[in-house]
Structure formats: C-alpha cells, structure tokens
Amino acid sequence: MPMTTCVFDAYGTLFDVGAAAAQAAREPDHAALADVWPAIARDWRLKQLQYTWLRAVAGQHCDFWQVTQDGLDWALEASGLDNAATRARLLELYWELRAYPEVPAMLRSLRDRGMKTAILSNGSPAMLEGAVNSAALGPLLDAVLSVEDVQVFKPHHSVYDLVGDHFQCAKTEVLFVSSNGWDAAGAAGYGFQTAWVNRAGEPMDRLYATPHHILPDLTTIPELI
Image 1 (cartoon, rainbow, N blue to C red):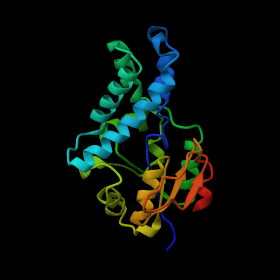
Image 2: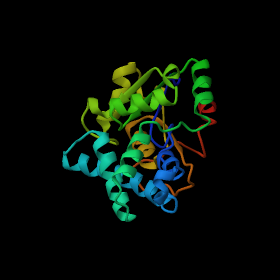
Image 3: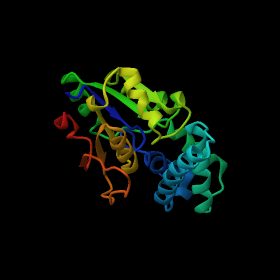
C-alpha cells in the first residue's frame, strides 16, 4: 500500500527548541544567559521530555505547557539563575519558535506530490497553534494533532492512533518523522514507517523497535515517499 500521509513531531523536528534560549541570550536585558544558555536549552528540553514520560507512567497527565514551565524552572535553578523577567521572556519566546530553514520547501514538495501532511505532538493545541502561525506553516499542513485528545504523552499507542482516526488511513500509509529517537522507535513499533532526524549525531536508543530511516535533517524526506 503506497504512502499517503506524512506526519511530523513538532518540537525539535519542525521547530528549533533551542531558539528561545539563543534569542534571549542576545538581548541586553538577559545578559546573564550569555554563557549558560546552551546548558539551559539542553536541560530544559531534557526535563520537559522526562516529565512527559514520568507523568504518562504515573497516570498524572497535564498539558505540555505545564511540563514546559516545570522543565524550564529546573534548568534555571540548575544554572543558578533566579530572574523572573528572564523566565518570562524564555516562556514568551517558546510560543514563537522558528522552523528549521528546510521545513517550508520540504512541506511544499510533499504537498506537490499529493501527500497529506500533519503534526502529531505532545504540545497543547494552543502552543501548536502559536508555533505554526509564527512560522507561517498553516497552509502547508492538513492537520495539527495534539495528545490532549487522548490525555497521555507519546509514545503511548493511543497517541499514534490519532493519525488513523483523523485521516482514515492504514498504518502502512504513514511516514512518521521525529527528531527524537525514542519517538521514531515508538512509532515504528506501532506500525508506521519512520524517519529519525538525528541532527546531533546521537547513538540509537536501545528500545523495542528501531527507525526505518536515519537522516541528518528534513531535506530528503520527500525522496522517501
């Protein structure tokens, strides 16, 4: 059965999650970030993800905005920063994350090939709307799907079910793309064809499934169809 639908994780895949800390660090009002923003960006993302997994296992769901704030608070404390204005600025910028430079052309190429395109994300609907609008990607997407519809974070199978429920397509018709190795593995175990966008050159996670493709960025995604 041919592929009909290409689905993307949002944060770290289409949108650069390090952009908020990098931008704030360039602003005079937040000069304290200048030397520590890479560590804050790394810790913020790590804790954000860890909190989704822990909440999913414990059955203590909250929306992604809450874990985003909680992760940032941990990262700021770990770096010895206690500045309410800097915290507020970092959270504000998270609603305006830039897309990676290859994203618009890649999505247009998929659409030109007749593919349906969508986001499937841990992000809350409001967060995703902000990111998509800020990056002007709305016209290039057929759907933006959030885990809030099932009240559990990825890689729970009910999250991946949202794709088939929305598009009425078989698993084998879907190419799922994520910058998170564990997410690409989870989707592969679910039955999707998957591509892991491994921008950082990380080792593969030792899990119950492995991604079908490993790419350095999103440029060649249309060639996989």
